[in-house]
Length: 400
Image (tube, rainbow, N blue to C red):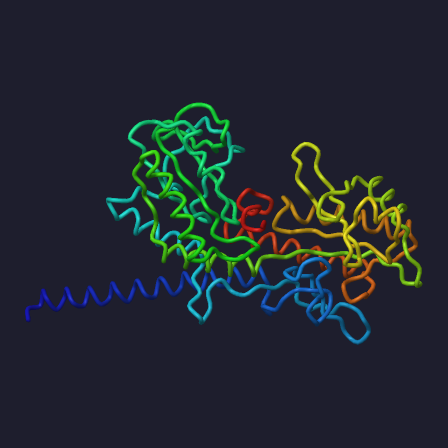
């Protein structure tokens, strides 16, 4: 063996070792940033050391503040919670999976480059809905000639139990346009997008197979060529994305409660809610809605399990009501929390009631400030994994 060969072997070993060390350092940095964003304990959140009881949803995560024997908040109390994005069980972050799959697809001459890497029209309105390959399974249709949206009617009206979106564009490099039955014009490229995970869970193989079947049948009718991703890889992406979202799915509840054994007449509660800007909505609760955008900032629901309806509010009373903030679904969650907290305090004062947590512990200013810190930490953790609170991506992932 010559000295040149020995040198090449040594250089190869050094290169491989350097790559391993670099990857290890990078992973430690990411894990440290996530731990700093969530806190060191990794436990769930609620207003006591015990898991909180949800008022309206079993999936709700309440803020947790560990109280000492005097009922105060220790200075070292944990402020937030979530598991690390990658653990000993081999859990891989969905965005890392997306990057790996994107590389594999880009290396395959049969499949197009990922949509996230394609050029977008400079004039495209940022508020216009666009495909999101990081969270959606995307199947492309390639008709030999441009087709109108009406030709896609079977797909546009398909119901899979999960949001299904269709986009078209008139040529390469142009912005995608969300398609509906009445959309005018013809499109040379069409894609179907199915969200991989939301609050109903991860998209399983049966659902993804049904999705492929719907698009395939439509492609045969057009006719059009079809480009679909590997379903095994999409199932893994869906599971990883669902696990990540479960860790970040935080809802904050502040309860206005009568503690003297009396109740609040429904008519009075409705009058106060509407005076504060709430509207009675479907689903049995009041929503505080932004008129300009139609976005729901926070809600007011019955302390009891019974939903609010116009009829029940006329005939019954309740011991309290719960202000609810869905952290991932609002822009600037800390500011919205401040607004909700003020509204809850005003209602509690007007009704001669108290503001409590799910365990009926009174919330003082220190406790409310600590909950605000948890809201800010959760928002920062969402941004860390590229989910901007209140964005279309967040609404898709935390809907359903």
